[in-house]
Length: 191
Image 1 (cartoon, helix red, strand yellow):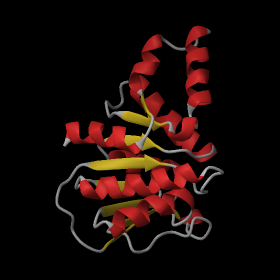
Image 2 (tube, one colour):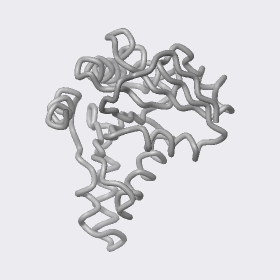
Image 3 (cartoon, rainbow, N blue to C red):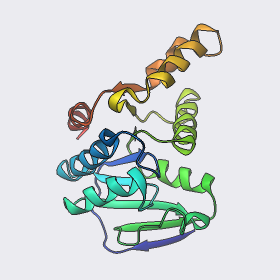
Image 4 (cartoon, rainbow, N blue to C red):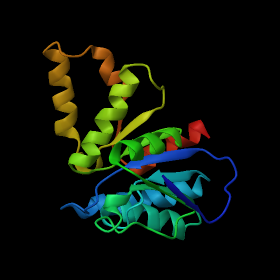
């Protein structure tokens, strides 16, 4: 693991954001990513994310930096080119693999938020959800259902519960929020 740090950050709350390396089809997704980056900075929190400069990842990070926020990126070395690893972060960690990436992101955050994304975002979400289910952490997990994007996922989780493959408590481990303003209220309560 390689760590690059531009400035020592004081201890602050950190929000881990999982999201797409693409912008997606709905402009509301990029608007939410921009609003989230700005909100993180305005609250005095630090963004912890996948260190890419593409898609929603790049949008969140650019918005946080532009608003004066602290940024902590974690990227595996094999994705430095594909995801255009963002080099102007306060801290950049280059890991050996995806497993180490998720572990470092999780260890350096207080709260997790999931914007729209693809298979990678789903995998990250389900890993932290599983860890929570297994009592490996108690961090809040916010599923940001921008423009109803995650509604099918929530329905699938309800189906899994209804079919007896998970206890109803599984739904207690996530909070589904409709927008960034609602997340801001939740984060302010944790500041």
